[in-house]
Length: 298
Length: 293
Image 1 (cartoon, rainbow over the protein chains, first blue to last red):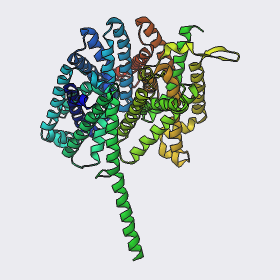
Image 2 (spheres, helix red, strand yellow):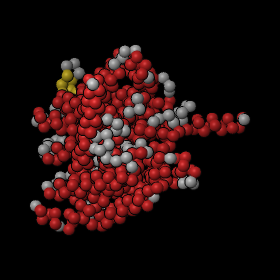
Image 3 (cartoon, one colour):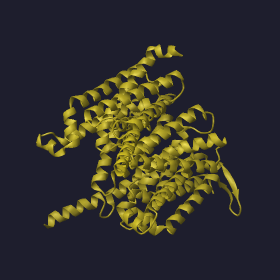
Image 4 (tube, one colour):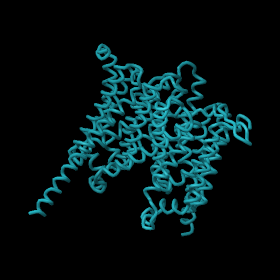
């Protein structure tokens, strides 16, 4: 059983899901403060038609080809969400829901057609969509790790700019920071993280990897930089532990286990977190009650 | 009725009931709850299957309703603990869905229950599972279930029309008038889950989301009156179901995928050409104004 862990392939899978978790956790913090937590859910579904079209056009399951297709179609989804929610009275969450369902429907249509056209090769595509980290080949992992590291690098390098962009729009204008440029960069790293994550955890559960670590991190700190670090840590742990579990008992889907680990970390943070954790809040309240009672008696 | 007839009829019932429910989802600005519930229903169905050992309609519906209410409750709970609303939806539904997938993979792997089926549905098999009703004859089980639920949804909307209207547009006023707003919220979310469960087996989770959100959003661009919006939305739902079926026949592809896509076509047309809220109209209006001034 432990020999599986020592095999170099498992180690590579572990490394790539861990770095994916780190990148997703960090990008999730930005999405959290932009109040666009479910954007990742909508865009990961919106990537499906692009993946299938890229697959039909090039008739091969090269990860970078599929990633380009996914990115183009996710960007179309993002543009559509923005167009509908800014130019009509339909709320942003309704436009996200529409993009999610309609793009996914289109993707399923195309997938059915692709399965008919390209025989025998379809099983790979299905595991791409539902997430099977164990099915990844070495070159896919290199691509994933490289792109995830690029995302992490951009976040660290522009830490000050992100802060200004998220918390003080007026000041950003004052110092000549292009908000539009930061918007584009944000969508860019969001889409990149989503499309590289799809293969490991699947379209549906990709959102969890973005949302859950960021919310958990909020229970431990008040500063943005610390939250980024903690969220990266939680994301990385979820990716690694989830993969470890599925590596030990083969045949299980990776994505769900990564999500369950992330959710357990969330529940732990919710209960015992330093900032507004339930237990601490409860202790604080009862202490206050006691002092008040004591004062009344005295 | 013919094979194709039953499929179109089933999908139209889904379009009708989802179209009605969807109106309130859009107006209450909780559209993504549809996405959340349509995924967590999977866990309810799996648990119902593990407890009873059979995949029958009744247990599935009960399991699905329970899952829907649990989802609503957990989302509200996290919200009351200062978690952002959309983040709490995201955390709750992905967790419950993940548990559902794990249970299927470990415990119910050989049963007639898999994730792909749940997401895309098996509408092509609907006409084969029939039951015999008095006076009508052989009717597919899914049609009976969906027809009952469509009637229930329609009845509840008609009977509590004023209450729905008030709680959707002005919850504070509704509360001050003594309408139980929280109870109405849970009743509504149960309706969403019942509709989702019933549609689930036929058309799959993703198409339920499409049918719940898109026709209602399209109808929202055409009118400012709730009653008109309800009629339009349910008609758009039925229309998308029919169009989607023929698109699927034409391209020989997934029926539920095509129906979801058809709702998108209806929306795009509304987005472009609807009066006052459509893009074209807005553009013309702005142009006319600039030329006159």
